[in-house]
Length: 130
Ligand code: 5GP
Image (tube, rainbow, N blue to C red; front, side, top):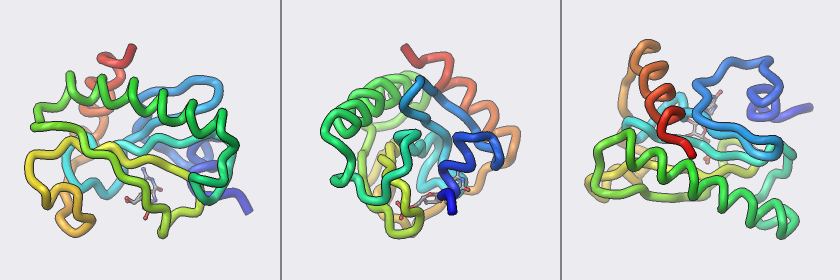
């Protein structure tokens, strides 16, 4: 069965898209630690990040770099934190989180956003993506 993230890539499940190319897809986390919390995934479905072939892994890191640069421009924050977990969704992904305090990297403190806020954020980040 395809992962929930594969369904997002295929448009079967909606997402707030931030950026995309032929191999990678970036979208806002639906239950964000902080405003702008973004997930970056390879379109190719592989469960564990270190099971990706090396080229896809380095491509994912390069694409995450570009997304982080856009996040820095669009979302005021101290810096962008990066984390890889994957215990909930078995499809390799990088969390990019605009952080101000250490707690922003803990998956306990959550930010509630309206649909309009999600849309506005995704658009702002997408506009800064190069
Ligand atoms: P992890 O697998 O790294 O433990 O966490 C998965 C992350 O994916 C969580 O932060 C969760 O909020 C996010 N997530 C789970 N399902 C969806 C979804 O359907 N859409 C979006 N945008 N994010 C999701």
